[in-house]
Length: 173
Image 1 (cartoon, one colour):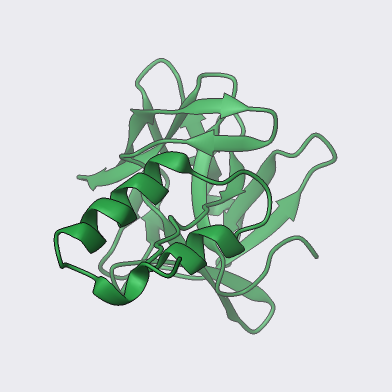
Image 2: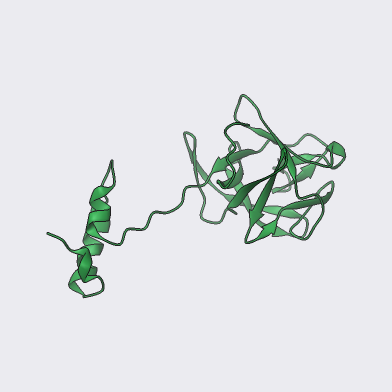
């Protein structure tokens, strides 16, 4: 669990089925499509949780709401057990169990009824991915300062903004 860093934005996903956890519907997280490449994930509709710490347990927060469990197959943003025990397996999957114990199962993906929720029965394991934040550049210097590949599209966008007078301080040649 040393890979779990408080404050990290997390996406809950199942790589085998190429899905991520989306919005809460009734008592489960919906399944949204995701693209996986190596150890990265792309999904515009996936929920991004902020990983928190509460004693030795973890929390998942989205829009100031804690993900909770009120029973087997019952997730909620309005109460229940909102702290979770996370065990990271050697294959990268995780066992995410409510801190109240295993009587409510653990967070899994059900490919037969596509959803993420807590199950006692054996479904598909989940993985936790760190969500990357989109970078925003306001000046040409910001873009040129980025190590690695430079986005020529972004440079042209910034140049056009400067020429349109939107950001006259951005153009430094």
